[in-house]
Length: 541
Image (cartoon, rainbow, N blue to C red; front, side, top):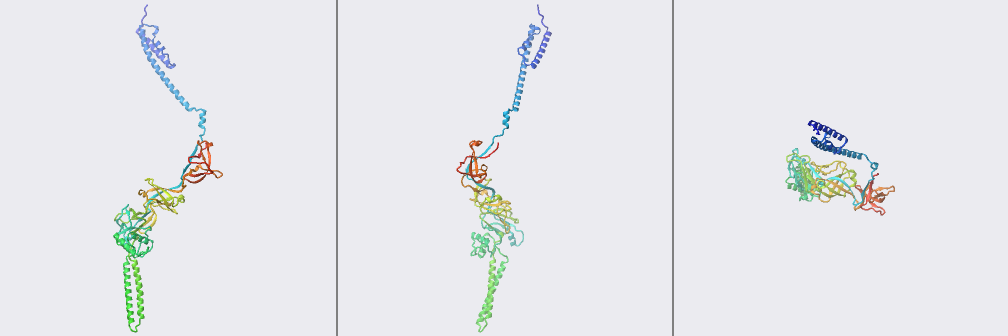
């Protein structure tokens, strides 16, 4: 008996039914979980109605191929779901672990930290107490000049003096007796001396400034003759004339009317001499005449001789007063040579300004100022360390002087600064580093000549106010404690600073202190050595 073969339409219907069943199976697998792989292919390869003819075989083969592709897709989806679930579970575990702490951890976090111990080492070194201030390296003397008033008066014009020659430019060295500048045709020169010029030095004058002038003239090779020191006599006049002649100038007369007065005195002396001669002749004739009266002739001679003595005295005074003088605005005394021209504040042909010349002289010194609270700590003779931060140069010095009273004003480096005014506009001043208001002027003398690069530099001065002299045991001030019984002690720590049982107290005698350290000496043979650790402070837990 033959089986009827399904038509093509029937086969297509069966395949569509199989596809619907496959779609439903996939949806169920996604909802319920994975399905064993063996079931899908077997079910998909079966012919509908259980038939297995030739047409069924073709249909089964097609269904088997579609089943393998769906199974692969299902496995991939399953793997993605598994990975996503693992990631979610891991994140949740991490979050829970961070937020959940055990009771032991909570207690440990709430407990106070252990007590901290601050300690320091016992040292053996030289302990010094120092005072640190700022200073300025400058010349020992700075002089500011405004010459020319005398030159204008001598010219008789009454106009403002004018610079007619500049002999030394700024920065040039100056030697004694050299012309610095010419004002209205008159020279300005320098001689050695510590006293400032404060008046015209004229013939007949006496004083220390005259003696200073005489010493300066002799140093240049101009003899002052037999004039006593400090007396402007004929020898000094000759020396002044010789100096001006060597410089190429004529000296100024002490007084323009001196020549007339001297001539009048000489004429009066000559007349007195003639009167004496006439009276003497009359007396001689009276004596030769027999019975002549000589009394009147003798009286006339006596009168004539008295008049001659007076005339001779006036002539001597006129001669002493007449002669060359040294005007105050043509001379400046400097403390040492070679000196230096620091500034010339006008050009040739310009009127003389205030402070035309600025000169510096003398060995370099260091000037500073001490605040009031350090005034009593620094004394003359103390050692000083000098440091220039700008150049790195160092030097050693000694405190030369400390002012007894504060200086109310300051002067800039190379400036005029406070000082005694000199006639003609000059002033002798302390240069840079002058103390500020309320400061006590401090002068430091270098032990050796300073490096030229330090000139005008600001420097740091470290004054050794006190020293132990030799190495001593020192500890921080806070390591020393005083008990109710008046004893001072330090606490020496053991190997473990926190081990209170290993600590020991050592009685000490305190000495000088400086920079937060204090000298200590064990009392009663107690042991305390360089390198021991001592308790400085301990924070309470």
